[in-house]
Length: 547
Image (cartoon, rainbow, N blue to C red; front, side, top):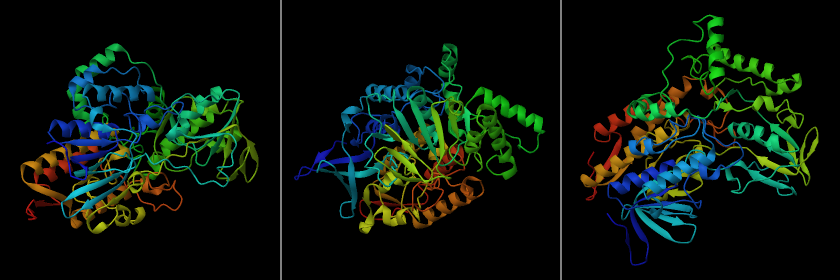
């Protein structure tokens, strides 16, 4: 199908997609191959999505590179060779540019363009999409590939605009190198981003002051260059790796643990944790099956990491500030390179802003309730308005002019069907939306599954004369209830985190991730398709309900 223009010069497409990251690129390729006219709109001037914007020092992936890529094409998998276990941002961006070139995707992407609004027209069953250049386009299908972490969170500190130095947000980092040599630098935030950036900036800055609200459980990455033989074997075992990732809990080919942390001796448990620590990565997180469902089991892993902090960091006062006391793994599990070791440097100061909150940002730096810190540069590693934030930033309106913000009550009543669809929003699909496995999984695996499910659905509609598809109220409520029940059976909901929206002032709390696992979720989606899209209302072009 080709795009057309109406008399008023509004371009008509079969599908419009937001974002040219992992989601948007594959959606464009998949739909275009199936013959659908597709247009992607991207705010940046290049592809990459989160890897286009996040260029801060130390930015790298925390999934192993041979698993953090597309698997829809064996040829693509074998053509690209990763250099190390955990790739840095430039290498991942190079990979996505390689993909865009290989499949000639840029010709159907409009860069430096934001979608401001998308309104559903019930007269013609099409989405009218309004762009920031003042133009509009029309599409039968509206697909969001905005990512779960793309709405940067800059806290509204008093005096933020008074600071006379330079300030940066890690999610909108300049493309050119920022020089911190000889400068007094402050960084607010010690989540995954801060943990990656702090050791790198500390090596360059004259002095680095870290403003920490919540300490983190970190395990060493132990990053290393890949051995050519290891890469060769991975490429040879492509089909098996792909199968294991798709059937797994978290989207990585990890053998699921079968033992409880409480059924083994303390010596055996210590040995397992120590081996995982030395190997690097998230091995502790997956060592025992009950770490996220049993308080006592969780405490064994938490205390092991706290013991490591006590051994690594020299100053007892700094140690106390760095010791977390919430459930391990209920905030994003973090892997690091010399994070705790950085606090042994003489040019690094750690400030506990829970004990001494930031009162204001001044002309010269930051003032807390206890002291003032003079700074030449300030970095906000304060994360994102996750899950719902990227979607609610856009004025999306479905039937009867109801906005997504209204439907979700600003996030207080977020309900979806499978994290893909919404009642009242026909022919709108979300890739890794709220209440799907999304950020608790290896993202490319979940993205591919959603893109393929959505593309198959659109092909089904096209072949069977289906004009619109929309989740039913009953199916949406049942899925949302199921998601909440599964989450409540874990420790995830017992901790304030960006998973629950706790990092955004006044944001309604809710755990909007399906924790049942990638494999189980895929199976559920497949069953729904096999039953003729159970839980969806399908209508033909004659407005007849097909079921």
